[in-house]
Length: 391
Image (cartoon, rainbow, N blue to C red):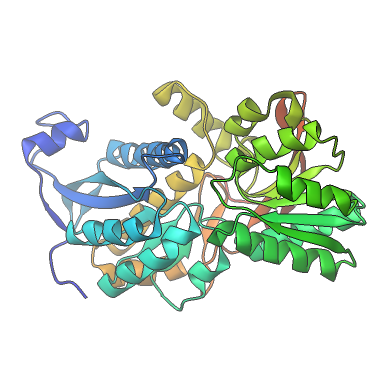
C-alpha cells in the first residue's frame, strides 16, 4: 500500500491546462489526479481517444461545479497513459499511473490489459473502473479494487446464444474467435448460450486479431453448411469477414457481441454490412438517461460522433469523483469502500456494483445494420428503470 499524498498544490501551469483562469478561486486549488489507461496509438487508437474524450468531459463537468475537499477548493485533472492495447505495456502503464499518485483509474479498454494491470492497482490499493473490459475473469480475481461499468461476457454470451437459436432460428451455427481474452471468452460463453437453448454448433474456427484474409476459415465453414456465423472479435475484424462472406456467396448472417457497433464497422463494411446483427453491452445512446445530452455535448466539443464507449468512460470518471465527494477524501481505502456501496444515476444508467465489482442489472442491446446504419432491435436486461442523470 502506498503512503504518498494523493494530490498536490497546483502550479499556475496546471490550472491553465485544466482550463481555469488565475483567480478563479480565492486560493490556489489542489489538483486531484485521475488516471486514464487506453490504447492511444496503434490500430485501436480511435477507441482509446474516444474513451479519453469521454473521461475528459467528466473532468470538465466536475471542475465547472468548483468542487472542494475538506472545505478547500480542488481541481480534477486527467492523466492519460497509452497502453497500446498490449498486456505487457498495460502493466508498465499501470505502475506509471500509480507512481504519479492518481486516486483511481478509468481503464483499461480491453480485458487482456485490465486483467494484468488490475494486480498493480490492487497492490497500490487504488480503484480501477473499466469502461469496456467485458471479460468476466477481470472481476473474478478477488480484487476489491476492480470494477466495471458495463455488463460482462457471460451475460453477452447467454443473451446472444439465446437470440441466435430462438429469434434467428439458426440450426447449424459456426463460431470464429480471434483468440484474444475478449474474443475467446465471448465465443466460449456464446457456445454455452447456444447449447443451453438447444442449438447446435457445427464448427469452431480460430483466427487472430491481426487476420485480414478469412478465406480459409470461411471455406471450412461453408463446407459445414452453417446457417449463422458468430464472430468473437471486434469491428475491424468483422468488416473484412463479412465482405469475404459475400464474395464466397455465404448467405448465413453474421452475428457478434460487443465491439461491432461502431461507425468504423459501417465505413469499412459498406453495403456488405447490411443485415449484420450484434449485441452490445449497455443501452443505445438515445435511450440512456443522459445519452442525448451527452451526445450533443460530445459533438459540440469534439466535432465528431461518439465512436463506441465514451459514455461509459464518462460514467467511470464521474463515479470516481462521486466517491471523492461522498467520502470527502482521496484516501484509496475510503474510495474503494465507497464504490462498493455507491448507488448513483449515471448517463448510461444506474451505477451500482455487486460484491465482485460488476455492474448490477446491466442492460444489453441488439442492433442490426439497416440502410447503412445501426438500428436498435431490442433492449435486454437492465433491471428497473434507470434513474435520471444530470450532467
